[in-house]
Structures are given as C-alpha cells and as structure tokens.
Length: 406
Figure 1 (cartoon, rainbow, N blue to C red):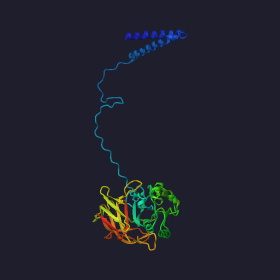
Figure 2 (cartoon, one colour):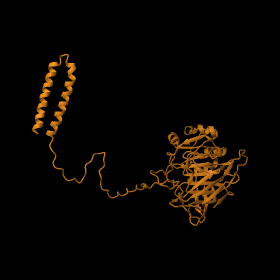
Figure 3 (cartoon, helix red, strand yellow):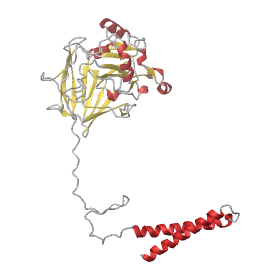
Figure 4 (spheres, rainbow, N blue to C red):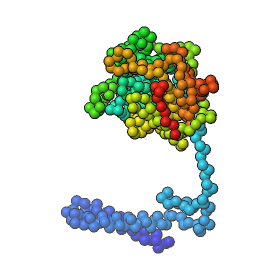
C-alpha cells in the first residue's frame, strides 16, 4: 500500500513539472513540436493515477455470502424459475344481458326496444339478370311472389338503420301493397302498376317512390350494375339513406297505441308430428320459376337456392338462410284486359299452405280479414302456429302450385 502511495506522489510531481513546462513554452515556437507529446504523457499519467486511486478507495467486498433465494439477473436474461401451477382458464365471457326486448318479426333478442317501430317494406328485383340482390340477408321476413313472367321479393326490415345497401329496387303491385300494409309498414319501391297506384292513393299508404318523385333522395343508381345489367336493374337504396331522409317527411314512424304483432315464436319451432322436409322445391306454377330449400343440421337453417345456384347476397356474399319457411296457396289469375300480363293475387280471406322448420313440415291454414289486417296462421286443428326464433321466407304460390318435399 505504501509503495502505491509513493507511486502516486511521484506521478503528481511529474504532472506538476509538465504543467510548468507547458506554461513556460506555450508562447515558444518549439511548443508546437513538443506540446502533443506532453499532453499524451499527461493524459496517460492522469489515467493511471485515477485507476490506482479508485482501487485504493474502493472498499474490499466481504466474503461471498450463500446464494440468495432469488437470483438477480440483468433484464436481458431470464433466471431459472420454478414452473408455477397451471393458470386456470379465464372465465368465459358472460352471456349477453337479456334486456327482455324482442324483434317482433323474428322473436330474437334486441339490445333496444324496436318493437313499436314501423317496419320498412322494400320491393326487391328478382329478375335473373338483376341477381345478385344486395341486402336481402338482413331482412327479417322475405316474400317471394309472382309478377309478369318471373318472381319478385318484398323484404321486411323491422329496423333498417344498420342495414347497408339494399336493392335493386323495383315497382309495386297492388298485392304487394297488401303485404306491406299487413305489417303497418312504410312502403318503399320504384314505380307502380295502375292497380297499385289506385290502392296506394285510396288507402293513403305511407310510401316512397323514386319514379314518381316521392323521396328520390333515398335512392341512387349503381354505375357498375347499370353498365352490366341495365338501368332498370341498377336502382339502389340503403339503411343510412332511408334513416337520414325519413324525418323530413310528415309520416308516422311508430305503430299506433295498442298495436301488437300477430306472430308468436319459440326457441324451437320444429312442428310436432311433422313429416320430413330436409330438401324441397317450391314451384310457382306456369312461369317455371322454382326456389329450393336445403336443411342444414349444423346451423338448423334452410339454405336457399334459385336459378340453379345458391341464393347469395351480393353485398356480403352470404347465402340466404332462414329458420322458417311458409308456403301459402292463393288464388292467382291474370287481370282481365291488362295488356302487360299483370296478375291478381288474393291476399284476403282464407287458404291453406305448409310450414317447414327444423327439417320437418306440416300443413297449415292462413287467414286475413281485411286490407289492413295481419296474416294469422294456424295448424289444421285450429291451434296457433308458433314459429322458430329467426328469419322467415314466405312463398306465395297458385292453389295448383306444387311443393316437392324429400
């Protein structure tokens, strides 16, 4: 230790001499030659003195203790640790809170009470050239019915606010006015037959009609569809457009007090004592149009097909699938003197039909008392028909129309 202190003292003496030398020669021309060397020596000596001093002042560690229970390591290296007991699986997410609210057209739960809203009934083009339709899978109830030479759809939406593009939109017939009115709905279409025009005016139906300038801002022409399908198959609307412009018009947006939907639902609507209906085809009679239904055991839904292919929504690319299928036999005949071949479908009175759900079907009866009444459905013994919770597809066929069940 004394020797180290002696070295430090000598180093300090050398440093003092170098500093004195630098002071004497700083203005001397020879300084430029010797200054770099003197500075290097000074730095080396300072470094040596610092290191030695640090070693002298640093306290010597105590004898190494026993290893601690927890090993301290740098953050980059993970210490060996005991494997803890397996962490239990997190609790599953709780089921959605049942608010008690139900969609009156499907029986399914809803977050908000939408039961008193007037539905939107929108006429959807089903011409072969106009497919695929858009927004059809969002409908709660879909009607398929005959028009001149083909079929058309009426899509019923209890709440259209979250529905995207819908279409293409086509013209009304007087019997589609009946269907729309049976739900106390707001009727949306583009043009009408002479018979439909008369009914709409006489009954003061709340409606929007792009062709005749009633709410034209709710519609637009899709340029891609117009280029590939033609102008008549390109007219579209959307939930956002409807809800944006609806408040501008003086019409009732909710049902009158005391209104109740006539449909009843249960979790499982499979009819008791029914016959197998895993595959069936509805023939609309005369026009050659058919719609097929295939029951899916996994989803418990009927997947639809038409025009030889799966029935696909062109918006979300999903197949049209429903829980319930109704086939209603109605008197259908041409309108005398109508040069366009328009039809009359009798939607009031009584009739028979079929109900399919859960892979089985039964015969049913339907009735409707007057132009503003709802449809009512019963089993053949007179008891009320109870639907399965979910969407419904309704086919209106001739009394001579056939259904091939398998």
